[in-house]
Image 1 (cartoon, rainbow, N blue to C red):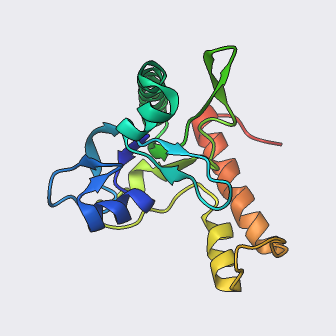
Image 2 (tube, rainbow, N blue to C red):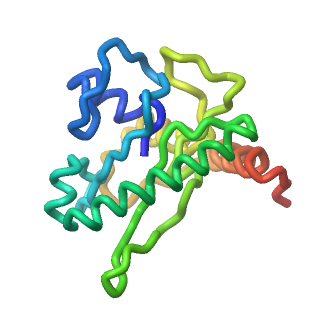
Image 3 (cartoon, rainbow, N blue to C red):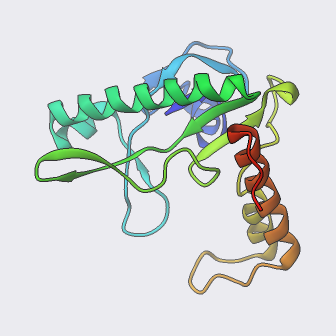
Amino acid sequence: MRGYLSGSGWAEYEQYGAISGLPLPKGLTESQELPQPLFTPTTKAETGHDQPLTMDEMKMVVGEDVAEEMKEKSLAIYSYAREYAQTKGIIIADTKIEFGMVNDRLILIDELLTPDSSRFWEAEQYKVGQAQPSYDKQPVRDWLVQSGWDKEPPAPMLPPEVIEATTKRYRQAYERLTGQKLE
């Protein structure tokens, strides 16, 4: 789910004027709030990043009813979380929601609305037209890029300062959203 134009969604919009095959208005800028949240399905790849799907492609994979149910549930989850986070001064720019099937029933799987699966921004620092500081794993990503890692196993050991910076961000997100301290 995407509520703001950021990350790979921003790159796709810049190149195609659309995200996941959904055309968007011209003239949007980086980190701009979208006219409405977008359901941007992907599928797990054997290796590498998840692969984007259009809604029609998704319907071919899981069937029309399941695809529509996933879209409805994703929008409901994102909308509820987004409204809650706003009361805590946090913008949820986008999030990954993963589903699976058990006994022909759609179920939610994996973690939900964490810094690993979501882009959390500080509402007070939000500025349209630029990348936003985020409570996420960006220190890890940045260090891995700078290290020259080729993305093949094994991953390099992270230095303590990268782990500490990431841990600090995760704690801040938790404390802002829950109002509780982690001990």
